[in-house]
Image (tube, rainbow, N blue to C red; front, side, top):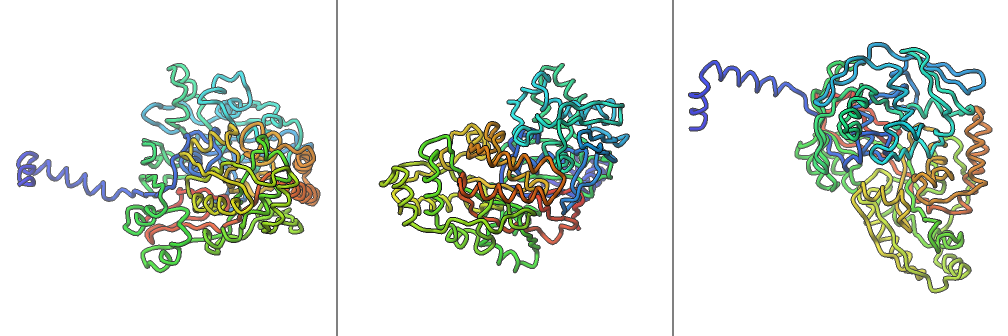
Length: 535
Protein backbone atom coordinates (compact mmCIF):
# COMPACT_ATOMS: atom_id res chain seq x y z
CA UNK A 1 0.00 0.00 0.00
CA UNK A 2 2.87 2.39 0.89
CA UNK A 3 4.57 1.77 -2.50
CA UNK A 4 1.31 2.49 -4.35
CA UNK A 5 0.89 5.73 -2.43
CA UNK A 6 4.43 6.83 -3.22
CA UNK A 7 3.90 6.02 -6.91
CA UNK A 8 0.71 8.04 -7.01
CA UNK A 9 2.42 10.99 -5.35
CA UNK A 10 5.58 11.21 -7.39
CA UNK A 11 4.30 10.09 -10.79
CA UNK A 12 6.32 8.29 -13.41
CA UNK A 13 8.89 11.06 -13.92
CA UNK A 14 9.52 11.28 -10.19
CA UNK A 15 9.86 7.50 -9.92
CA UNK A 16 12.51 7.45 -12.62
CA UNK A 17 14.42 10.17 -10.79
CA UNK A 18 14.16 8.26 -7.51
CA UNK A 19 15.37 5.04 -9.12
CA UNK A 20 18.23 6.87 -10.76
CA UNK A 21 19.21 8.36 -7.40
CA UNK A 22 19.12 4.94 -5.73
CA UNK A 23 21.27 3.41 -8.47
CA UNK A 24 23.80 6.22 -8.19
CA UNK A 25 23.92 5.78 -4.43
CA UNK A 26 24.46 2.03 -4.81
CA UNK A 27 27.38 2.72 -7.12
CA UNK A 28 29.08 4.82 -4.44
CA UNK A 29 31.83 2.86 -2.67
CA UNK A 30 31.60 3.20 1.10
CA UNK A 31 34.40 1.63 3.12
CA UNK A 32 33.65 0.91 6.80
CA UNK A 33 36.50 0.57 9.28
CA UNK A 34 35.58 -0.77 12.72
CA UNK A 35 38.07 1.22 14.80
CA UNK A 36 38.90 0.56 18.43
CA UNK A 37 38.69 4.05 19.95
CA UNK A 38 37.58 7.61 19.39
CA UNK A 39 40.15 10.15 18.23
CA UNK A 40 41.21 12.59 20.93
CA UNK A 41 41.29 15.47 18.40
CA UNK A 42 41.45 16.04 14.64
CA UNK A 43 44.74 17.93 14.79
CA UNK A 44 47.65 15.46 14.99
CA UNK A 45 49.90 18.19 16.44
CA UNK A 46 47.98 17.74 19.69
CA UNK A 47 48.10 13.93 19.90
CA UNK A 48 50.36 10.91 20.20
CA UNK A 49 47.88 8.02 19.83
CA UNK A 50 47.13 5.74 16.89
CA UNK A 51 43.32 6.19 16.83
CA UNK A 52 43.79 9.95 16.43
CA UNK A 53 46.42 9.61 13.71
CA UNK A 54 44.24 7.11 11.81
CA UNK A 55 41.30 9.53 11.88
CA UNK A 56 43.24 12.75 11.22
CA UNK A 57 46.72 12.80 9.74
CA UNK A 58 46.20 9.74 7.55
CA UNK A 59 42.96 10.68 5.71
CA UNK A 60 42.78 14.48 6.05
CA UNK A 61 46.32 15.90 5.91
CA UNK A 62 49.65 15.66 4.15
CA UNK A 63 53.16 16.44 5.31
CA UNK A 64 56.15 17.93 3.48
CA UNK A 65 57.51 14.41 3.13
CA UNK A 66 55.87 11.08 3.77
CA UNK A 67 56.64 7.39 4.15
CA UNK A 68 56.07 5.21 1.14
CA UNK A 69 53.06 3.02 1.88
CA UNK A 70 54.09 -0.14 3.69
CA UNK A 71 57.67 1.04 4.35
CA UNK A 72 59.77 3.56 6.29
CA UNK A 73 61.25 4.99 3.08
CA UNK A 74 60.90 8.79 3.00
CA UNK A 75 59.37 10.13 -0.21
CA UNK A 76 58.24 13.58 -1.44
CA UNK A 77 54.73 14.75 -0.60
CA UNK A 78 53.84 18.45 -0.28
CA UNK A 79 57.52 19.13 -0.89
CA UNK A 80 58.77 17.95 -4.28
CA UNK A 81 62.38 17.91 -3.10
CA UNK A 82 64.66 19.10 -0.31
CA UNK A 83 68.25 20.08 0.21
CA UNK A 84 70.40 19.82 3.34
CA UNK A 85 73.35 22.19 3.77
CA UNK A 86 76.85 20.79 4.26
CA UNK A 87 76.82 21.59 7.97
CA UNK A 88 73.36 20.00 8.31
CA UNK A 89 71.92 23.14 9.91
CA UNK A 90 69.77 24.39 7.02
CA UNK A 91 67.10 22.29 5.30
CA UNK A 92 65.33 23.82 2.29
CA UNK A 93 62.09 22.38 0.93
CA UNK A 94 60.78 23.13 -2.56
CA UNK A 95 56.99 22.97 -2.40
CA UNK A 96 54.60 21.34 -4.84
CA UNK A 97 52.53 23.79 -6.88
CA UNK A 98 48.75 23.93 -7.26
CA UNK A 99 47.87 21.67 -4.32
CA UNK A 100 44.27 22.51 -3.42
CA UNK A 101 42.91 22.87 0.11
CA UNK A 102 39.71 21.00 0.81
CA UNK A 103 36.37 22.80 0.66
CA UNK A 104 34.15 22.02 3.65
CA UNK A 105 30.97 23.28 5.27
CA UNK A 106 32.99 25.85 7.23
CA UNK A 107 35.71 26.80 4.74
CA UNK A 108 36.11 27.63 1.06
CA UNK A 109 39.76 28.30 0.17
CA UNK A 110 40.78 31.19 -2.07
CA UNK A 111 44.33 30.00 -2.79
CA UNK A 112 46.31 26.75 -3.04
CA UNK A 113 48.81 25.44 -0.49
CA UNK A 114 51.99 27.52 -0.19
CA UNK A 115 54.84 28.51 2.13
CA UNK A 116 52.55 30.51 4.43
CA UNK A 117 50.83 27.28 5.46
CA UNK A 118 54.14 25.68 6.42
CA UNK A 119 55.09 28.68 8.54
CA UNK A 120 51.66 28.75 10.18
CA UNK A 121 51.87 25.03 11.02
CA UNK A 122 55.30 25.01 12.61
CA UNK A 123 55.21 28.46 14.19
CA UNK A 124 52.04 27.45 16.04
CA UNK A 125 54.11 24.82 17.86
CA UNK A 126 57.35 26.81 17.95
CA UNK A 127 56.32 30.31 19.07
CA UNK A 128 54.51 30.92 22.35
CA UNK A 129 53.39 34.29 20.94
CA UNK A 130 51.62 32.66 17.97
CA UNK A 131 47.84 33.34 18.12
CA UNK A 132 47.11 29.60 17.92
CA UNK A 133 49.80 28.41 20.33
CA UNK A 134 47.43 28.03 23.30
CA UNK A 135 44.28 27.07 21.38
CA UNK A 136 42.72 23.78 22.55
CA UNK A 137 45.26 23.40 25.33
CA UNK A 138 48.39 24.13 23.34
CA UNK A 139 50.14 20.89 24.35
CA UNK A 140 52.49 19.85 21.53
CA UNK A 141 53.76 16.74 23.25
CA UNK A 142 55.50 15.12 20.30
CA UNK A 143 57.10 18.32 19.11
CA UNK A 144 58.55 19.18 22.52
CA UNK A 145 59.40 15.63 23.56
CA UNK A 146 61.61 15.39 20.49
CA UNK A 147 63.25 18.74 21.34
CA UNK A 148 61.98 20.16 18.05
CA UNK A 149 61.34 23.48 19.80
CA UNK A 150 65.05 23.61 20.62
CA UNK A 151 66.23 22.21 17.29
CA UNK A 152 64.30 24.57 14.97
CA UNK A 153 65.52 28.14 15.45
CA UNK A 154 63.23 29.51 12.72
CA UNK A 155 61.17 28.62 9.66
CA UNK A 156 61.77 31.06 6.82
CA UNK A 157 59.68 31.79 3.73
CA UNK A 158 62.07 32.18 0.80
CA UNK A 159 59.22 32.54 -1.70
CA UNK A 160 55.70 31.13 -2.11
CA UNK A 161 57.06 27.70 -3.09
CA UNK A 162 60.20 27.54 -0.92
CA UNK A 163 60.69 27.24 2.84
CA UNK A 164 63.89 27.02 4.82
CA UNK A 165 64.24 25.38 8.25
CA UNK A 166 67.13 26.87 10.22
CA UNK A 167 68.38 24.41 12.84
CA UNK A 168 70.51 24.99 15.91
CA UNK A 169 72.50 21.86 15.09
CA UNK A 170 72.56 19.00 12.61
CA UNK A 171 70.19 16.16 13.52
CA UNK A 172 70.26 12.79 11.78
CA UNK A 173 66.54 11.88 11.98
CA UNK A 174 65.21 15.34 11.02
CA UNK A 175 63.89 14.47 7.54
CA UNK A 176 62.24 11.27 8.77
CA UNK A 177 60.72 13.24 11.65
CA UNK A 178 59.12 15.60 9.14
CA UNK A 179 57.14 12.64 7.77
CA UNK A 180 55.59 11.98 11.18
CA UNK A 181 51.97 12.73 11.99
CA UNK A 182 52.64 15.79 14.17
CA UNK A 183 54.18 17.51 11.11
CA UNK A 184 50.88 17.47 9.17
CA UNK A 185 50.34 20.81 7.40
CA UNK A 186 47.41 23.02 8.39
CA UNK A 187 45.77 25.81 6.39
CA UNK A 188 46.85 29.31 7.43
CA UNK A 189 43.87 30.82 5.61
CA UNK A 190 41.41 28.58 7.50
CA UNK A 191 43.18 29.49 10.74
CA UNK A 192 42.85 33.20 9.98
CA UNK A 193 39.15 32.87 9.16
CA UNK A 194 38.37 30.94 12.33
CA UNK A 195 40.32 33.42 14.46
CA UNK A 196 38.42 36.36 12.93
CA UNK A 197 35.15 34.51 13.56
CA UNK A 198 36.25 34.03 17.19
CA UNK A 199 36.00 30.25 16.80
CA UNK A 200 39.70 29.24 16.61
CA UNK A 201 38.95 25.89 18.25
CA UNK A 202 37.22 24.77 15.03
CA UNK A 203 40.59 24.50 13.30
CA UNK A 204 41.28 21.36 15.36
CA UNK A 205 37.80 19.86 15.59
CA UNK A 206 36.37 20.61 12.11
CA UNK A 207 39.56 19.93 10.18
CA UNK A 208 40.66 21.08 6.73
CA UNK A 209 43.62 19.53 4.94
CA UNK A 210 45.02 18.71 1.52
CA UNK A 211 44.63 14.94 1.95
CA UNK A 212 42.63 12.26 0.14
CA UNK A 213 39.51 12.43 2.34
CA UNK A 214 37.38 15.34 3.55
CA UNK A 215 36.05 15.29 7.11
CA UNK A 216 32.24 15.42 7.16
CA UNK A 217 31.05 14.62 10.70
CA UNK A 218 31.95 13.08 14.04
CA UNK A 219 29.89 11.56 16.82
CA UNK A 220 32.01 10.69 19.85
CA UNK A 221 32.31 6.96 20.52
CA UNK A 222 30.08 6.30 17.51
CA UNK A 223 31.46 7.26 14.08
CA UNK A 224 33.58 9.54 11.92
CA UNK A 225 32.51 10.16 8.33
CA UNK A 226 34.68 11.25 5.41
CA UNK A 227 34.16 11.73 1.67
CA UNK A 228 36.76 11.42 -1.07
CA UNK A 229 38.55 14.64 -1.96
CA UNK A 230 37.83 15.16 -5.69
CA UNK A 231 40.78 17.56 -6.09
CA UNK A 232 43.41 15.47 -4.28
CA UNK A 233 46.78 16.09 -5.94
CA UNK A 234 47.62 12.39 -6.19
CA UNK A 235 44.21 11.57 -7.70
CA UNK A 236 40.77 10.85 -6.24
CA UNK A 237 40.49 7.78 -4.02
CA UNK A 238 38.68 4.75 -5.51
CA UNK A 239 36.56 4.92 -2.33
CA UNK A 240 33.80 7.52 -2.32
CA UNK A 241 33.09 7.43 1.38
CA UNK A 242 35.09 6.36 4.42
CA UNK A 243 33.37 5.58 7.73
CA UNK A 244 35.10 4.90 11.03
CA UNK A 245 32.58 2.88 13.08
CA UNK A 246 34.00 3.24 16.60
CA UNK A 247 33.62 -0.13 18.29
CA UNK A 248 35.53 -0.43 21.55
CA UNK A 249 34.76 -4.07 22.31
CA UNK A 250 37.10 -6.29 20.24
CA UNK A 251 34.60 -9.16 20.23
CA UNK A 252 31.89 -6.90 18.84
CA UNK A 253 34.33 -5.71 16.15
CA UNK A 254 34.90 -9.30 15.09
CA UNK A 255 31.18 -10.03 14.92
CA UNK A 256 30.59 -6.94 12.80
CA UNK A 257 33.35 -8.02 10.42
CA UNK A 258 31.89 -11.52 10.07
CA UNK A 259 28.40 -10.13 9.44
CA UNK A 260 29.72 -7.77 6.79
CA UNK A 261 28.90 -4.64 8.80
CA UNK A 262 32.46 -3.45 8.36
CA UNK A 263 35.17 -4.19 5.83
CA UNK A 264 38.23 -3.90 8.03
CA UNK A 265 39.32 -4.24 11.65
CA UNK A 266 42.61 -3.61 13.39
CA UNK A 267 43.87 -5.56 16.40
CA UNK A 268 41.75 -8.74 16.15
CA UNK A 269 41.97 -10.62 19.47
CA UNK A 270 44.64 -13.35 19.33
CA UNK A 271 42.03 -15.93 20.38
CA UNK A 272 40.01 -15.15 17.21
CA UNK A 273 42.82 -15.46 14.68
CA UNK A 274 42.32 -19.16 13.94
CA UNK A 275 38.61 -18.72 13.24
CA UNK A 276 39.20 -15.60 11.15
CA UNK A 277 41.76 -17.41 9.00
CA UNK A 278 39.33 -20.28 8.49
CA UNK A 279 36.57 -17.97 7.23
CA UNK A 280 36.60 -18.03 3.42
CA UNK A 281 35.08 -14.54 3.28
CA UNK A 282 37.96 -12.95 5.16
CA UNK A 283 41.68 -12.22 4.83
CA UNK A 284 44.10 -11.87 7.73
CA UNK A 285 47.41 -10.02 7.34
CA UNK A 286 50.27 -10.03 9.82
CA UNK A 287 53.78 -8.69 10.32
CA UNK A 288 56.32 -8.15 13.07
CA UNK A 289 55.40 -5.03 14.98
CA UNK A 290 57.76 -2.11 15.51
CA UNK A 291 56.40 -1.79 19.02
CA UNK A 292 56.83 -2.30 22.75
CA UNK A 293 54.40 -2.77 25.64
CA UNK A 294 55.51 -1.67 29.08
CA UNK A 295 54.48 -0.89 32.64
CA UNK A 296 55.79 2.54 33.61
CA UNK A 297 56.64 3.57 37.18
CA UNK A 298 55.96 7.19 38.04
CA UNK A 299 59.38 7.80 39.62
CA UNK A 300 58.21 11.14 41.04
CA UNK A 301 55.88 9.29 43.39
CA UNK A 302 57.28 7.26 46.32
CA UNK A 303 58.11 4.45 46.63
CA UNK A 304 58.87 4.29 42.89
CA UNK A 305 61.61 6.88 43.29
CA UNK A 306 63.68 4.02 44.74
CA UNK A 307 65.45 1.95 42.09
CA UNK A 308 65.29 -1.15 44.33
CA UNK A 309 61.49 -0.99 44.32
CA UNK A 310 61.42 -0.75 40.52
CA UNK A 311 63.86 -3.64 40.22
CA UNK A 312 61.82 -5.67 42.71
CA UNK A 313 58.66 -5.31 40.65
CA UNK A 314 60.64 -6.15 37.52
CA UNK A 315 61.46 -9.49 39.15
CA UNK A 316 57.96 -9.96 40.62
CA UNK A 317 56.00 -9.89 37.36
CA UNK A 318 55.78 -13.23 35.54
CA UNK A 319 55.83 -11.64 32.09
CA UNK A 320 56.05 -14.92 30.18
CA UNK A 321 52.70 -15.96 31.64
CA UNK A 322 51.18 -12.76 30.18
CA UNK A 323 52.53 -13.62 26.75
CA UNK A 324 51.13 -17.14 26.98
CA UNK A 325 47.68 -16.12 28.24
CA UNK A 326 47.09 -12.83 26.41
CA UNK A 327 49.18 -12.85 23.22
CA UNK A 328 48.85 -16.62 22.62
CA UNK A 329 52.33 -16.91 21.16
CA UNK A 330 52.06 -13.82 18.96
CA UNK A 331 54.65 -11.78 20.85
CA UNK A 332 58.17 -12.02 22.20
CA UNK A 333 59.37 -11.04 25.65
CA UNK A 334 60.72 -7.48 25.70
CA UNK A 335 63.95 -6.67 27.50
CA UNK A 336 64.80 -3.34 25.82
CA UNK A 337 62.67 -0.26 25.14
CA UNK A 338 63.17 -0.72 21.37
CA UNK A 339 62.14 -3.82 19.38
CA UNK A 340 64.71 -6.39 18.20
CA UNK A 341 63.97 -5.63 14.53
CA UNK A 342 65.34 -2.09 14.97
CA UNK A 343 68.97 -1.21 14.31
CA UNK A 344 71.05 -0.53 17.46
CA UNK A 345 69.10 -3.11 19.49
CA UNK A 346 71.33 -4.28 22.35
CA UNK A 347 71.05 -8.05 22.50
CA UNK A 348 73.56 -8.19 25.38
CA UNK A 349 71.19 -6.48 27.79
CA UNK A 350 70.67 -8.62 30.89
CA UNK A 351 66.97 -8.92 31.63
CA UNK A 352 65.19 -9.33 34.98
CA UNK A 353 64.18 -12.94 35.53
CA UNK A 354 60.96 -13.89 37.29
CA UNK A 355 61.89 -14.45 40.93
CA UNK A 356 59.66 -13.92 43.95
CA UNK A 357 62.69 -14.36 46.22
CA UNK A 358 64.74 -11.65 44.49
CA UNK A 359 61.75 -9.32 44.51
CA UNK A 360 61.20 -9.75 48.25
CA UNK A 361 64.88 -9.22 49.01
CA UNK A 362 64.97 -5.97 47.02
CA UNK A 363 61.78 -4.72 48.68
CA UNK A 364 63.32 -5.40 52.10
CA UNK A 365 66.48 -3.55 51.06
CA UNK A 366 64.33 -0.57 49.99
CA UNK A 367 62.62 -0.54 53.39
CA UNK A 368 59.40 -2.34 52.44
CA UNK A 369 59.74 -5.89 53.86
CA UNK A 370 55.94 -6.15 54.12
CA UNK A 371 55.22 -4.53 50.77
CA UNK A 372 52.93 -1.53 50.28
CA UNK A 373 49.72 -0.47 48.54
CA UNK A 374 49.52 1.03 45.05
CA UNK A 375 47.29 1.39 41.98
CA UNK A 376 47.81 0.02 38.47
CA UNK A 377 46.14 1.84 35.59
CA UNK A 378 45.25 -0.66 32.85
CA UNK A 379 44.64 0.21 29.21
CA UNK A 380 40.96 0.71 28.33
CA UNK A 381 41.44 -0.07 24.62
CA UNK A 382 43.03 -2.96 22.79
CA UNK A 383 46.23 -2.02 21.02
CA UNK A 384 48.56 -4.28 19.02
CA UNK A 385 51.13 -4.21 21.81
CA UNK A 386 48.49 -4.92 24.50
CA UNK A 387 45.33 -6.71 23.32
CA UNK A 388 43.74 -7.03 26.77
CA UNK A 389 44.83 -4.49 29.35
CA UNK A 390 42.31 -5.54 31.98
CA UNK A 391 43.35 -9.18 31.94
CA UNK A 392 47.01 -8.16 32.08
CA UNK A 393 46.22 -5.89 35.02
CA UNK A 394 44.57 -8.75 36.88
CA UNK A 395 47.59 -10.98 36.30
CA UNK A 396 49.94 -8.22 37.47
CA UNK A 397 47.78 -7.71 40.55
CA UNK A 398 48.06 -11.42 41.42
CA UNK A 399 51.84 -11.45 40.90
CA UNK A 400 52.40 -8.39 43.09
CA UNK A 401 50.29 -9.88 45.88
CA UNK A 402 52.83 -12.73 46.11
CA UNK A 403 55.51 -10.24 47.22
CA UNK A 404 53.27 -8.28 49.57
CA UNK A 405 52.23 -5.46 47.24
CA UNK A 406 48.49 -4.82 47.18
CA UNK A 407 47.57 -3.23 43.83
CA UNK A 408 44.16 -1.80 43.02
CA UNK A 409 43.13 -1.65 39.36
CA UNK A 410 41.79 1.48 37.70
CA UNK A 411 41.11 2.75 34.19
CA UNK A 412 39.42 5.62 32.35
CA UNK A 413 38.06 6.48 28.95
CA UNK A 414 40.98 6.48 26.49
CA UNK A 415 41.15 10.26 26.12
CA UNK A 416 41.03 10.81 29.88
CA UNK A 417 43.56 8.01 30.41
CA UNK A 418 46.09 9.81 28.21
CA UNK A 419 45.35 13.26 29.62
CA UNK A 420 45.69 12.14 33.25
CA UNK A 421 48.86 10.20 32.45
CA UNK A 422 50.45 13.28 30.84
CA UNK A 423 49.78 15.13 34.08
CA UNK A 424 51.49 12.38 36.09
CA UNK A 425 48.44 11.38 38.12
CA UNK A 426 49.27 7.66 37.97
CA UNK A 427 51.56 5.44 40.04
CA UNK A 428 51.87 2.41 37.76
CA UNK A 429 50.50 2.59 34.22
CA UNK A 430 50.27 0.20 31.28
CA UNK A 431 51.40 1.87 28.09
CA UNK A 432 52.95 0.98 24.77
CA UNK A 433 54.41 2.48 21.65
CA UNK A 434 54.63 1.82 17.95
CA UNK A 435 57.49 3.53 16.14
CA UNK A 436 56.68 6.46 13.87
CA UNK A 437 59.74 6.63 11.64
CA UNK A 438 61.96 3.56 12.03
CA UNK A 439 64.61 5.45 14.04
CA UNK A 440 65.61 4.46 17.63
CA UNK A 441 65.36 8.12 18.61
CA UNK A 442 61.60 7.86 18.16
CA UNK A 443 61.49 5.44 21.11
CA UNK A 444 64.35 6.57 23.31
CA UNK A 445 63.89 10.35 23.09
CA UNK A 446 60.10 10.53 22.82
CA UNK A 447 59.46 8.07 25.65
CA UNK A 448 62.43 8.42 27.99
CA UNK A 449 64.26 11.75 27.61
CA UNK A 450 64.32 14.46 30.27
CA UNK A 451 62.48 16.79 27.89
CA UNK A 452 59.75 14.18 27.40
CA UNK A 453 59.47 13.88 31.20
CA UNK A 454 58.53 17.57 31.30
CA UNK A 455 56.12 17.43 28.39
CA UNK A 456 54.16 14.28 29.06
CA UNK A 457 55.12 11.40 26.77
CA UNK A 458 57.72 10.08 29.24
CA UNK A 459 55.10 8.50 31.49
CA UNK A 460 57.71 7.31 33.97
CA UNK A 461 58.76 10.98 34.42
CA UNK A 462 62.30 9.58 34.70
CA UNK A 463 65.16 11.96 33.92
CA UNK A 464 68.62 10.40 33.95
CA UNK A 465 71.54 12.67 32.98
CA UNK A 466 73.73 9.84 31.71
CA UNK A 467 70.99 8.32 29.57
CA UNK A 468 69.97 11.73 28.26
CA UNK A 469 73.51 12.60 27.16
CA UNK A 470 73.84 9.31 25.28
CA UNK A 471 70.67 9.77 23.26
CA UNK A 472 71.45 13.44 22.53
CA UNK A 473 74.95 12.54 21.34
CA UNK A 474 73.41 9.95 19.02
CA UNK A 475 71.13 12.50 17.33
CA UNK A 476 73.82 14.95 16.30
CA UNK A 477 75.99 12.57 14.29
CA UNK A 478 75.19 11.09 10.89
CA UNK A 479 77.39 8.02 11.57
CA UNK A 480 75.09 5.05 12.18
CA UNK A 481 77.95 3.17 13.85
CA UNK A 482 78.46 6.00 16.35
CA UNK A 483 74.74 6.32 16.92
CA UNK A 484 74.45 2.57 17.50
CA UNK A 485 77.20 2.67 20.13
CA UNK A 486 75.42 5.45 22.04
CA UNK A 487 72.00 3.81 21.79
CA UNK A 488 73.31 0.46 22.99
CA UNK A 489 74.88 2.11 26.03
CA UNK A 490 71.62 3.95 26.67
CA UNK A 491 69.71 0.66 26.71
CA UNK A 492 72.12 -0.71 29.33
CA UNK A 493 71.56 2.34 31.56
CA UNK A 494 67.81 2.11 31.08
CA UNK A 495 67.73 -1.50 32.20
CA UNK A 496 69.82 -0.84 35.28
CA UNK A 497 67.57 2.04 36.38
CA UNK A 498 64.33 0.22 35.42
CA UNK A 499 61.88 3.11 34.85
CA UNK A 500 59.68 0.54 33.09
CA UNK A 501 58.99 -3.13 33.23
CA UNK A 502 59.37 -4.03 29.55
CA UNK A 503 56.63 -6.51 28.63
CA UNK A 504 56.28 -7.51 24.98
CA UNK A 505 57.01 -6.89 21.32
CA UNK A 506 53.92 -8.14 19.50
CA UNK A 507 53.06 -9.20 16.02
CA UNK A 508 50.50 -6.95 14.34
CA UNK A 509 47.35 -8.26 12.63
CA UNK A 510 44.68 -6.82 10.38
CA UNK A 511 41.51 -8.62 9.31
CA UNK A 512 39.34 -7.62 6.36
CA UNK A 513 36.74 -8.92 3.97
CA UNK A 514 37.93 -10.32 0.66
CA UNK A 515 36.30 -7.34 -1.06
CA UNK A 516 39.20 -5.18 0.16
CA UNK A 517 42.05 -4.70 -2.30
CA UNK A 518 45.15 -2.52 -2.27
CA UNK A 519 45.65 -2.34 1.50
CA UNK A 520 49.27 -2.32 2.71
CA UNK A 521 50.26 -2.84 6.33
CA UNK A 522 52.47 -0.11 7.73
CA UNK A 523 55.43 -0.99 9.95
CA UNK A 524 54.54 2.21 11.82
CA UNK A 525 51.22 0.85 13.08
CA UNK A 526 48.84 3.35 11.46
CA UNK A 527 46.20 2.51 8.84
CA UNK A 528 46.02 4.40 5.55
CA UNK A 529 43.03 3.82 3.30
CA UNK A 530 44.09 5.91 0.33
CA UNK A 531 44.93 3.36 -2.38
CA UNK A 532 42.40 0.86 -1.00
CA UNK A 533 39.47 -0.27 -3.15
CA UNK A 534 36.43 -2.55 -2.84
CA UNK A 535 35.91 -5.13 -5.55
